[in-house]
Length: 554
Figure (tube, rainbow, N blue to C red):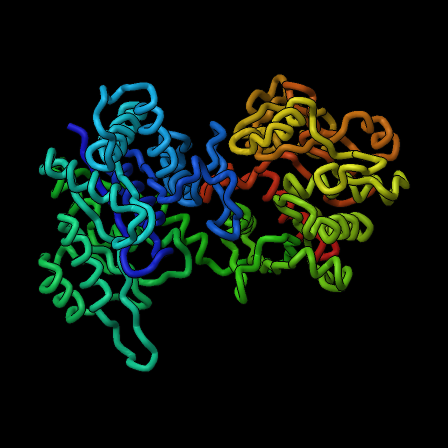
């Protein structure tokens, strides 16, 4: 019998539901169960692809091309298994499906309403996901915060499913315990009110996971038990930690996995997470090296604050590789527009430079400057998607002397369109069909032998097919290198080390080691495939080059 775990959040957004879901899923998987996590989002977008990353963080790109919420990335990293469209649902998808059915007269003349039609579609999505993944336990993350009007149908679907299958459903509520500085003690009222909101929707949480700065004391646990109508053993303390990868261990020590299995009437087993304990030990160990990497991007600012959410997968990939290289990495977040205004002095003298994903004209010249600065000064450089395109433009302007070279994304009338749309994308843009129409998901590419790219993928056994030198990386872009200029670039020393199997599109470029210690850029997104126990080879080798550069070994 399929079991369901609903996970909701309270008090504030960003409380850590996604990490909680990932951690619970990890523990249950380690207990021998087939677990599928599923994220329900509130917004009416069909997917996360058209959302400004500053608004909702870095859309996570899946192998099947799904542009999803950041939490899907956490699921992948914790479970070490691929996620896709069966793990991600938006309210826009739900509404569209219900409306399309109504237009096809599939409701036989009924008046279509939120309940039961929207809630039925939500429950259908859960069961479809379970069927397609052969899940024994579905862990459903309800987007947003309890009490918002946008997610009320998700909570109602949870209530209905609990009513239908009372022995097969539990509700985990993740909420926040603030400790105001002027008071100096944790306050329990916000969670009490959050649980009361759940109660008003007909939901009584089975487990309460309290997020706080410090571990909960007995007094706070007892108050939650009393005022939330729960047993004290069902109150779980989840205090702040230095790394989110410590959270599975925090929950494991409090026996959360067995608590859940007991409530779902499932057999307990020996849960072995020694591999995760070793990972956390590696993360927390004192590092042999320390380097500084400048990330020249355009999505750091939100109001008066700077956040890393827009490049979440990139920062994760850097972390994963840094642990493998026994290195502490200090990242400097540099606004590309500041580089445009003030020049290369903003970048300084880092041990490595990364130009990441981006869209549009704003800050583009700053990124081009950064790519050229790294090339001219032999600073290790890694370009990701937009970072490849800007490396190409910089090379065209400086080396090929095509001074007005550009991408047609930013200058439609450029004399030298070294980056341009392929014909199929031109028609899509003409029709303004932006959603889900880029080159998305996994694409195969053939790597040229006797290149740095080939050596790296071979070293880490990262080929999809080594005999044919085929690799596979995820993509999320629309503009491509213009192959009309290929020979001109090659004559001046730029190496096109990988091209797509379909359409022969440029995938990876590099400079020879005789010219530059490490200058590589990829049109794909290796950051989305990186995992804590399996960092991506390109990031590992980039960091190793940064260490060597700092130590004057190259």
